[in-house]
Length: 295
Image 1 (cartoon, one colour):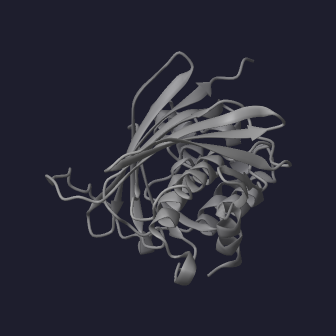
Image 2 (cartoon, rainbow, N blue to C red; image 1 turned 60 degrees about the vertical axis):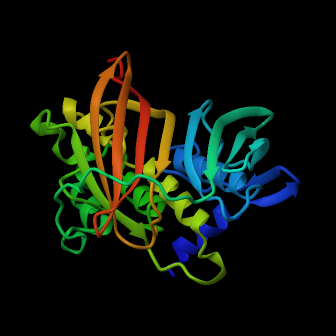
């Protein structure tokens, strides 16, 4: 296991300070606020620790309310909304400096058999044939106005091996609009096992990664490179995930992303996460703030 992955696991290992209250640390992000995937994953950890382990998470719905302060701890308060025979519902509020910064509702379900179907996995190349972040980012360093961005991006993603199928938005913005679709393969930078190898952890790790690239397809539709090249200002507004089938975050997962619409300063991203053998594991939808800076 890489040191970066161990650090991420420590970040997700919240401190229980009361029966339904947990505290989490933050880590430096690429931009001066808490990474949205971090607070979403930590909130899901908090919710999951109040639920029977035999009931895995099947969905979450969340709103990002305020920018998080990466220099301060985050307190997560869990409200045990319902414990039913089949479903368990939790509500989590993340607080910093006395104000809520994030709100999550999550549902957990006792496993049962039912009808089965799924959309087939789209075509994608073998992830092992694609460049790593360490190979890709330095090649495009000249596009970023801030020379420190590459190092910060590599540090922020060091716990995850994330590989673009096609060039990312910042690399092709000068070429104009592209089809609003983006694919990345990802897995943790190291294997998980032993006591830490629990279904909730894999779901929380996928939640963490899901906020990294989902709005790329919005940028592609307009030939924009993103915040890193300074042609848009963006932030996550809300986030929803449905966990359909078990998966492992330390094995390759295909994140197939697209954008059906953008308007009113907001862009919508939707995605499906597939296992390498073609099983549909997760559906993700997010709306984000996507503003063009005023000159």
